[in-house]
Length: 293
Image 1 (cartoon, rainbow, N blue to C red):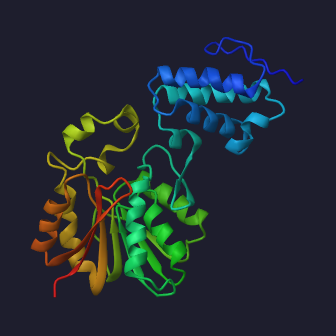
Image 2 (cartoon, helix red, strand yellow):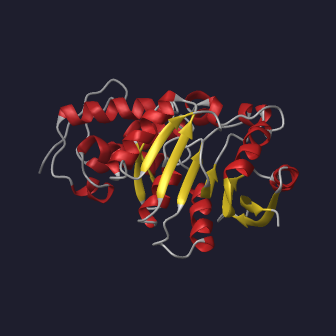
Image 3 (cartoon, rainbow, N blue to C red):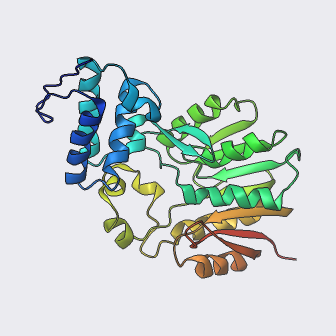
């Protein structure tokens, strides 16, 4: 039998199996208030060992060096650093994206924008021009370009940190020849068939009441948009109206209860709200708009 011993100052026990190691770590994570302590412990141990999560419990042996790594990662998670920052990646639309400090972590609800774009543009061979405003990790533009092989993309962001992560992800998915990045707030040049935007839309109060992972680690500028959560839409939508082709479509992510207000901003700028699409939780999440006719 392989005996794994760990004398870390916080685990403070002899561990004979990976299951015991996970149980102790999960207890610590639960005490720290982590929502999914058992799952997070398993993912952190898998990352420490360099094995898939489903292989953790059958790992033949775990040396002290790997356990020290696991202990350090567990301590970071107990401090409520987001799991995605710790392991360095996040899945979005079945693709892996590198993430870390300075960039917003992709959320599952944002996949609604890609799903709706695929419905609006069913021909995956179409030579579309796509723009991603506030690209962040580039998850939206990369997911779109992976599906639309003849499309060209542009991602813009005001944050140098975000642009650095976006470049890594564009290179990771072999898209450097089809996607360019620009440092800008909301401005771009050209005309586009598809415009994506997942702007900041939390109010200051919502941000103050969010979890410690969000408040303490993710970039505030990518999350908060003034007292009412709408300032980014007011600044961005006039630019969208200028950049959108006659038959183009814009796909906007919105926060809970914001669809009517953002729809009015679209209307004031000559854009028609064509549909309001819920995410998997039933929350109105994606607004689809086009030029008024």
